[in-house]
Amino acid sequence: MVLAPHPNPDAPVLSHFDLTGKTALVTGGCRGIGLEVARGLCEAGAKVAITYSSTPPTEADEIAAKISSTNEGRLVKAYKCNVRSQAEIEAVVNKVTEEVGGGRLDILVANAGVTANIPALDYPEDKFRDLFDVNVNGAFWAAQAAARVFEKQFKADGKPHRGSIIFTASVSASLVNVPQKQAAYNASKAALVHLGKSVAVEWVDFARVNNVSPGFIETEMLDVHPQEWRSKWVEMVPGRRFCKPSELKGAYVFLASDASSYGRT
Image: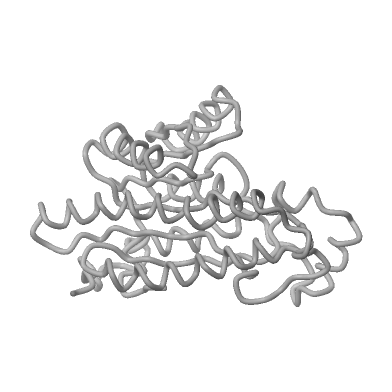
């Protein structure tokens, strides 16, 4: 097993981040972190597909069109997808590979996720299972489908293929945020981090796998919480402010590009 080498490590450093000609798929790409990641990848030169589940289709198409129009008309398409379904996510990955990538896929960002604040003693079985179904199973189905494409490309090319898989985990994977009670969410993100580490080893021949673990990000997911909690969280953050979603896109572009050719989770 050999990690793919950088194609030209001596080239000027900014060229290492260039994603021109690459195809990326971002699950949960219509809002929050996923939306900014999709923007960042497109800004770096990639053609991008975004998936959505609850966003109205016309709105999702408008979001894709706006990203495209602000990036020289680069191809951006939206696909409805329930990541809980292995068959559905695999079908979407294959469709994106053909329709957006012209037969190739280079980047998968498994970003779709949900959260819930329920005391552990009261957690209903169906809600616990559903959260894991999205945050862990859904991320794995997306990564697995992309990895199958990457492996196929690797075997067809006869040379190392630099596919990149990036999981959106959370700082909650390694610490317990308070005062919210979210044992299931924390556990799901911890599982996702170790899943990433595990498949990074298994898939080293044809893909790099990394995790990004954001802290408190100014998204709709944060907005629903009481102001009392938000004030407490700010006090816990050494920087004394929340992060804007757009501040994360550089990290994802780095991990998706040749700039992180030797980087794995």
